[in-house]
Image (cartoon, rainbow, N blue to C red; front, side, top):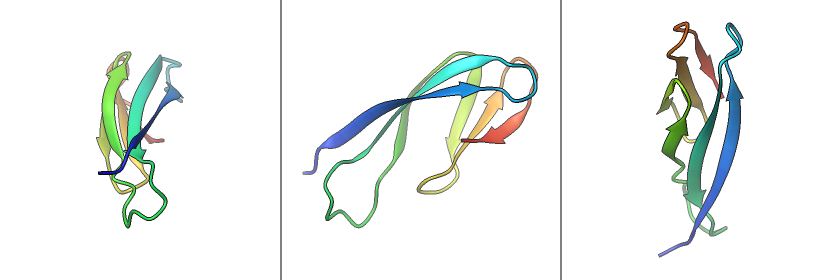
Length: 69
């Protein structure tokens, strides 16, 4: 099984300025057909969903703004 690469993405709501952090992981082996990117956890007042292999949709719990990361 391939290893997982784990990293953080700092997020800021474009409407109200709320700040948070996404903890994300993906396949770390170059010959994998898919990245298999996943959201491991979310810090801050946000909800997050994977839209595609590379796009993450965030919703700010403070003001309700939807935006992509």
